[in-house]
Structure formats: structure tokens, C-alpha cells
Image (cartoon, rainbow, N blue to C red; front, side, top):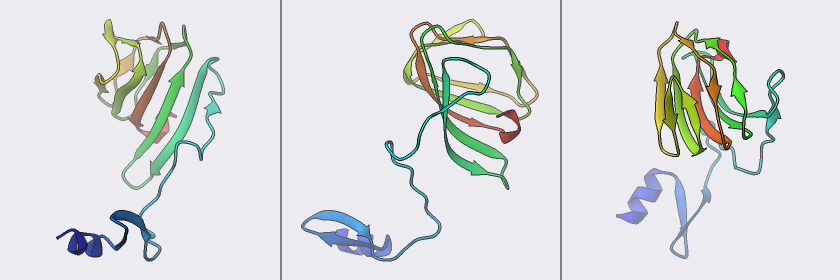
Length: 132
């Protein structure tokens, strides 16, 4: 069963472990944790962004956002929906305190009050590209 599954996935089995795909697959993209540099936010000190994926056709951008302790992201408008998952640290959003594993959704055309972190945080965001 394992061999048939790996065959369907186009993977080779080597000594009971998975190896690289046997042919190049154009439909897949990988970004490894050490392969992309964090970019400082152009306007907000203590904030860095690591872009992961942009889908212009479907209108979404996936990014990692890292905020230093005490960082404040000012009030802002959402053109499209925002999905926010806290990977580490703390985030104060709309009067709620979020920690690792917590999730926040903001509808498109909504307005956020300032976002704050006391100890710093790392977030996974799925957003409208027009907002970044």
C-alpha cells in the first residue's frame, strides 16, 4: 500500500524514507525556513514580513509577520478578508488577548483598531494583496 501511495504521489522509496520527487513538479512551490529573508516593514519599526505566497487570480497573499515586543500596528482598513493565526507570542486585537494557536478573522471592508503586542509575536496571515 505504501509503495502504491508513493507511486501515485510520484515519490521514490529509499531505505524506508521518502526521497525527492522523481521528476520536477511545476505545480508545487516550497519555501524553507532558512531560505527567505525577513523584510523590515517600510513604515513600522519592529515589524518584519516574510512573503510566502501570492495568488493574484484568487486575490490572496500569505505572509508571516513578526513583531518585536511593544510593537503597535496602527488602525487600518481591510479591503478584503484577513485571516490571522498566532504562531508564537501575544497579540491584542479588538480588546481580546490572543496567544499561540489562537485565530482571528476580519471581514473585508472592516476597520481595525491598533494591534499591539506586549512580548512580541509571529503571525501567519492570509490577506488581500491590496492591503500589503
